[in-house]
Image (cartoon, rainbow, N blue to C red; front, side):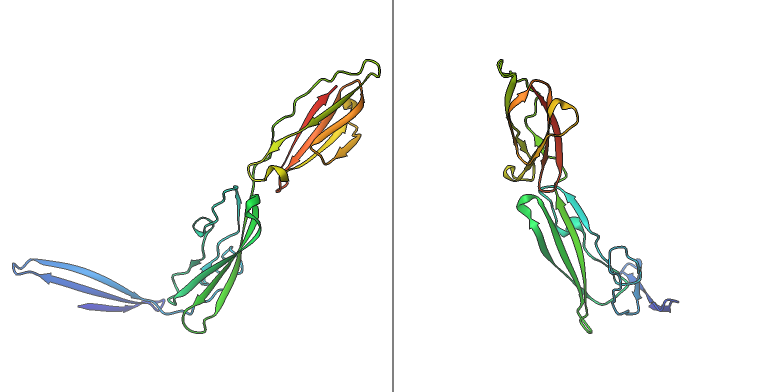
Length: 231
């Protein structure tokens, strides 16, 4: 036996009643409900992931920022389009990736192009760009920056000083780390020299306390600044 009902939202409910009786007269009953929904043509109006139109066919995945050298950018992590189940048309979901930058350097962007297409009808294609940014979230590590004392020449009352700084980074190759320094003679807040170099080398430094401030940057402009005194 079955019962057919129509609802206000044009859905049709079919209720089927099953009865099974065995040879001993034992009875088991079950009920099955079938919902038939009106077939609405699939459509998309949203241009971003805010889901402005909650009645269209998709919720687009949002842009992502991942701070890791070994980033997992799989769609299971960064998201996929969510198809509205109210639509009965089968929808194909495709994507392709454009890589901007170098994965080797640990800093790059992925332009993930999503495409939706209905398998019936006009085969309309809807396209959306999801941006995934992968970058290093940690500063470089400076390995050596200690205050030192330098003996001045007894006759000239000046001294010579050379120092090379070293740093490492979890994403940027050591050869591509950027080094610079500022030299403050007598440590009075005035800067006598600025240079991009990992080595400071001066002769004829007057007796006194001087300061060198080093700035180390990786490819994502993550920087670390340290100071050391000499003489």
